[in-house]
Image 1 (tube, rainbow, N blue to C red):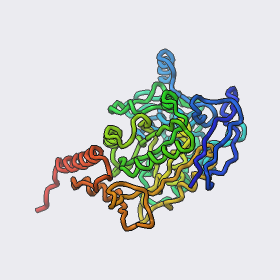
Image 2 (cartoon, rainbow, N blue to C red; image 1 turned 45 degrees about the horizontal axis):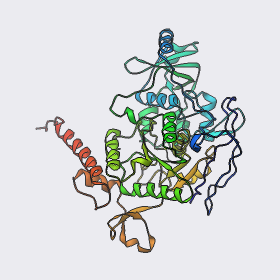
Image 3 (cartoon, rainbow, N blue to C red; image 1 turned 45 degrees about the vertical axis):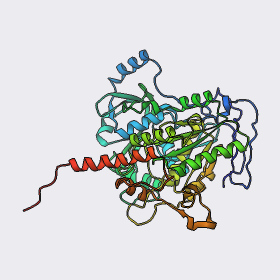
Image 4 (tube, rainbow, N blue to C red; image 1 turned 90 degrees about the vertical axis):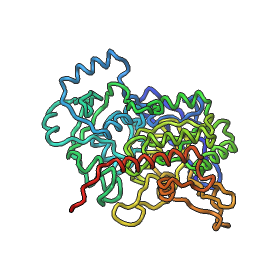
Length: 462
């Protein structure tokens, strides 16, 4: 198991652009916890880890007069229409989740990401960056842009979202991008079908100026806290450690056991107030995942019913789209949480994984995600906390850590079984999930069934 090591901020010269602290040499896989020592000043309040590059990137135009000026200027620029997934990436970039990246990747950044899973900074150090954050355009758009150095990015309603400055256009080699990101070019990869297969053959990179904060007006914007807002909240709560848990599924009591046990271990190490960042993914997900709105209702019940402590838990939405790219993608998930202030990251079995799209097996080795995180370039400052395996203890009638010496007493309840029970409006074993959270799941699958019943039936051939 990776060591539970405390990250103390390093000295940083903030007058320099895109600088990171000197790396601390430390083994993150050891038999005993290791505490790191600070090299001196540069301390962030409440011991929050410094963002990649030393400064959190924020790309939203700061005031209304400046926004009006940008809108007038943008009227003269060529336009690039964004998809919903593109807007989600603008959101990610605008708030600094990808710090120190300041916009859609130019070719040098794209190639470093594909081949090295990291970006080199001015001082020669590297920060992790495992997923390309790029914007595709087609041949027609490329001709329209011509020699212009700026373009206006608009949404599907032609509303101005951002200006992309000092642009660079380069070839979009889709096959290479897919092969290096997913490790396969097999058909049926959800994000590829959604955002790459039909995208243009060119990529356009540049520095972003986002006109105003990205809002979705779906009743969940209050949960979409930026890295800066999360850091403020952690400081307000006097956090001396932040441990992040990403999920795209409902929370069951096994998840809760892991999170509460992690906090207990951090307290035993000497931390006074570790805070949990429960951070569901809020961007694109594949069609059979539970939608964000229902997941957030379920998470609310988990806190309301005391499964997790609201005083030591911050629930927020991570705006990134989901790639299902396994060990490559989990590095992005971890890196982004550094920028939000987390110095511990919980990683489980087959993180960001999926079933192989054409074969009856998992696409990735279940243990590779946590192993890669322990070695990934640019993540040396982050402490990786692998899952302990939890299962349903039939004797104790609750979720518990798996004990191999009495394996017969445990039942592993798969996601497939959980969904089947919810669809059939059956109850899971007592202690598997809080009752209110389970009811949300049942209501979701019931709403799917009712929607299916309302669909017009095709006429039966005579």
